Image 1 (tube, rainbow, N blue to C red):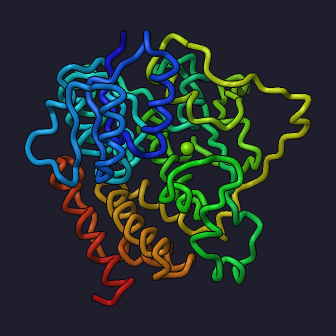
Image 2 (cartoon, rainbow, N blue to C red):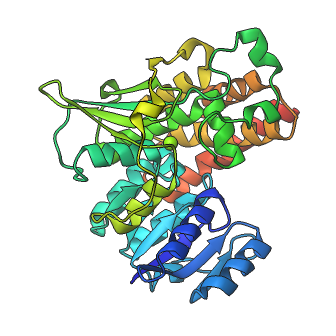
Length: 362
Ligand code: MG
């Protein structure tokens, strides 16, 4: 029986994890459940799964490290920058990490990797693209490869003109063509900021140079990513878009358990691929630039991005203004080293203040 500490239990990944635990009651149980603010949702899960510990960030005080005391694997599915401190606490408790919070690596990649090495902790990705790469590398992070190709659905606005993009609303952005996810990440998919985050995530997970990572549009979301090897061979992982597979694999790794429907390739018929239209989606390029600059720049990118996306969801700013907000924060906040949690958190709060000033003028 594998004991899971699930951080972010009331979100999209959290709910799908609960489905997996329901399906395999002899394989998994929850030792701890934590949420951001949905206390009613947490209570429901607590009554069903009887974890030893529960925690609500909005109400919680004190030490979060006790959440990881009794677990075999920590599934970090909290949203946004808030996930980083849980990831670090779980690593310092010496637990295997199933990482669904990409911001942990985007903002604190250097720090997370250093701590994981120090504590002998393995990080297994839950993000579907990185899980695909992990599988294509035979689930061994030391497998030699030449290039990584991340697939992107392109989001709902792939073929919109700039004029059309200026008029899209939050409701339009939340209509993702293939994946069903939380609101924040769905908007990040529409701006392609999410794909930029994933390039940074791939850099840290697989030790790749930015020049080795490419993103390609694949509207059907069947090929979840590819790895190219020196001899020109390309290995991909395929499946219907369903997050339960990467979640479950991160929990059962290196074992596999029945999970999803098998692909019916003849029924799918045709798969399409095209170049990423970077010029129309400046968030992607901003993310790569911040990633290349390193230090606290990706934390600034993310902090400003979080503020901008919530302002867009609230109807306060237009879609193109998301990129403008991020660009402004990156231009105004000086890069520093990202060697401690405090340094990264400082960059995050400076970025948020800068973004709020840009958006609301105060
Ligand atoms: Mg992804």
